[in-house]
Image (cartoon, rainbow, N blue to C red; front, side, top):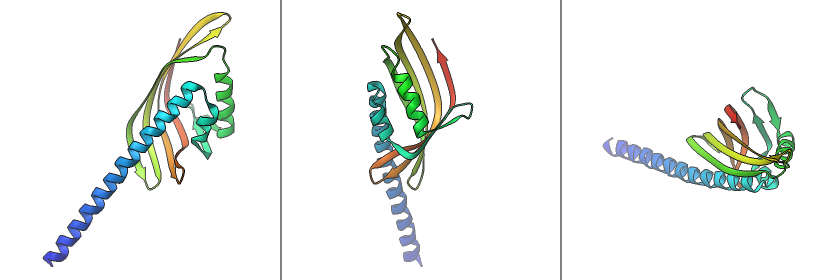
Length: 156
């Protein structure tokens, strides 16, 4: 009986360590994905951004308006076309990770400052937001399935 109990406890400990190790690797992979996403945003590379999204990607704003991948692509295309658009600052901070199989929900915050030309004048805008990003692990790596912005503050 003692041997069976010891084996059971040892097996549970091994499973726990393995799960923790897998999560640590997944967190590291997600951090790399966020760095890749940030670089694509700064480059205004819509193709690279959309390449990191699942086919059923959606984006929801704080008021509950949801956009499909096609609508989100069109929105970015319009925003990135602003004359002289340049990102001065972009910080993406991941506060927590919650895993359920091949799904990760990441509570994140972002802070952004950008400048552009409007009517011959340089204009600077800033924003900060909080949300939950849902990622799905695929054979190609982690892809963004859903972005839910829960709070956003815009400034000039």
